[in-house]
Amino acid sequence: MPAKSEPFLAPGSWLRTRLDFSTTPAFSELDRWKRGQRTSPLEWVGVLIERLTRYSSLDMIDNMFEPLGLKDLTFFLATRPDLTSRIVSMSERTKQPTFQHVARQPCFEPDMEDAQGGGGIFGAPGEYMKIIRASLRATDASACDGPAIPPAQLLRRSTANAMFELQINDGARKALQQAMAYVPRLNDMLGGIPSATSKDWGMGGMLIMEDLPRRRRKGTMTWGGRPNLAWVN
Image: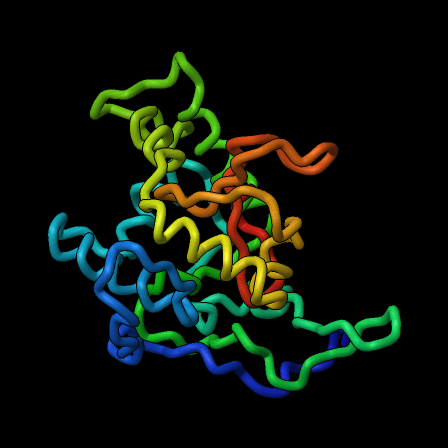
């Protein structure tokens, strides 16, 4: 890792506006599955939600960040020098059991023009844990499921349950299983789950459909990404 005073050498290849995400559909059949490039599907889902609800991603600051007391989170890193000075640079494994600094930071782009929900929030781990804690509260049987949700709960109980409902058919499930088995890099990003492990897909991510002793229980939802972070587990 670089010294604390060492500046970032170059931003990454992250696209600054949603219009830059011009990925076209890979197929139209419902019995296929493919991991999207970068986060383009989520970005376009975000556009759809904004148009249907007339809420922008920036409204999250008022509706979610502030009620949960989240201060160290931002879509626009260039506007928060206090966070920029604390951000951790990315590194990569070498053939030796060591790490080396990466000159080109793959997911570091301080000058974003749009609030990108698929992979555009910068923040401290403690703030992320507050979001996870609030989401987990919604899975409790006593959680509120009405329109007036306590800020500390974040989601309706029915919304949290829907995240774990199976969403794909047999053909897509087979394609998911094959992708995890035959693309080691993709499987490694998701925690190196044994390739033969039964998997499925829910609204919130990949579901582990059998117990993995000392690792994950059946029904665990997980997903990860290029920075080698497993953000749901």
